[in-house]
Length: 324
Image (cartoon, rainbow, N blue to C red; front, top):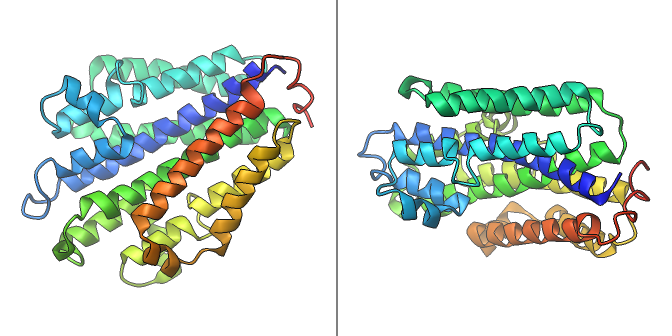
């Protein structure tokens, strides 16, 4: 397997995970937008959605107002937005097409049929009464692609690069969802503890499929500190930062490779710092500041992965690490 193949596998998985995560963010934002206007400033939740994705400048260059209709089209169906669900599914399918010989036929058929259905939806548009149904469809197709990979592929480095893309993207997105709620949606202390506050934190938990898990762990009122603890430091929470980084670290050690020393060192430092952290320490430091630094470290890990495995001028150097 060439380094270009490993690259395609990594971005195939990361793009599909990004489509799911964008659907999750849009779903929670859409639910928040249904609150009475007395609870949330008009369009504030949609501005927050654009801020979390880092696409607010692109949006403002082409749309007049961050209302539900405009943001939903921009983030879900817009062909010109590279971060839209439409383009994420397209990239997943194109990367899969480039490595059809490395993935199972079931996986290719799943990603290809997902793209064909996405094209139909993009052509027809999303009906006002089908917004949540569309988000559920995206999440289900992402679950299906991961499940098929898990159930049909050899546990070699082909599989590991796919999982690496999944968990790196998931870590990035969980941090963004938590940060936008804490830092952007509640800019005023007077809102803390109110009806909007409770509903928003509940929506955040639901956006990462963690509402039931929260109830099982804490069995009490939903509070910002406990939500943050669940999504940052709980190793038994599927989408927590610590779970994602643990998995990334494990996969990188299994893949290894001659140029991976700095990558393994940096990932190990991030993992160690997470395991040594406490939620009180994070809040004393500042949750927004902590999450911003975490996102910078995840971005740097992505760059180091590219350098270690994908940006090789010698395409014959990577087969040594594939198939361990």
